[in-house]
Length: 407
Image (cartoon, rainbow, N blue to C red):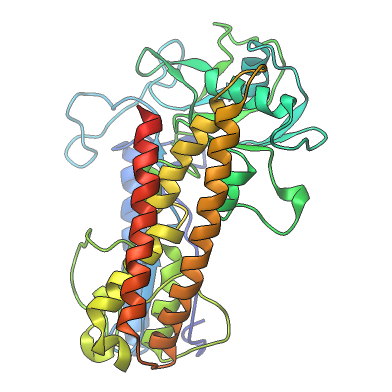
């Protein structure tokens, strides 16, 4: 496509940690996994060499390579001890009773039945499943509230650690999902609840009476061992590689907080392009040479950077506000009993208020960032500092409450 003159190319490359010939997952350092990585390296080298032959290189072309998310490995360390896949290949047992590798499949129907919940429901199976109670009851009905409390009570055995643990990390109903930008314009698509499970587990529906050998409703699936889509730091902390005209050569950089929504405005700015779509990201000016920044961004570089940083922590689903609000939501959904539900009403009302306040701030910040980045309009330092102060105050307020309910 590039050789044919198409100026912007997006490609998606599948993961290297699945053995598709045998329908099973590789473990870290396993010979097949290491070989797959070598083949990927060789293919990338051939790709860039071929482009260079056509005069396409980092001196005249902007390249962005990223991962949509990281994956959480589910399993034990390989054998022998100290294996690294480079000097010594790792091996993994895949036969019962001692299986070293494989996600833990949780039969949510059976686990809930043990809590006395037999309400019909469907799930979008995942490590963070969305749950649809049949009939789409309101979030505060007795059936929905008992369902949420039961989810919070579920405990399961982890075969890798030998520990009994709660299945879920976080629970969100439509109030929290709205704060996290997970509610669309179609009410039928909004789940009753979203459960962010511990990432070793893949949550599904099944029979109400579990038939696994240990009757735990937990089975092991060696075909899959790399879970994603959940809300844990090892999954949501990923990477992007950017190289091209105007981009600084910084090597590995872990100090810049960004997410995928920032790639679009960064690409457009570097390429000297603009359009009429709204952004939910910002120009990542920290990695751009000063001479390649828009004039007004360059004039107010530090202020724009601070404004963008607060914007991300307010608005990104996995920013500080998003993570802390999930803790408050989990406390609310799990609180109360059939005789009283005061805490739920109080904390849900608070989260609704936070969402309204939060939505107001990013709209103003987005306007300023778009104007200074793509319109070369001067920034009003007093307005920018006021928005930074308001955003920081809201983030800190929610953080303090999240810490209080966690204790």
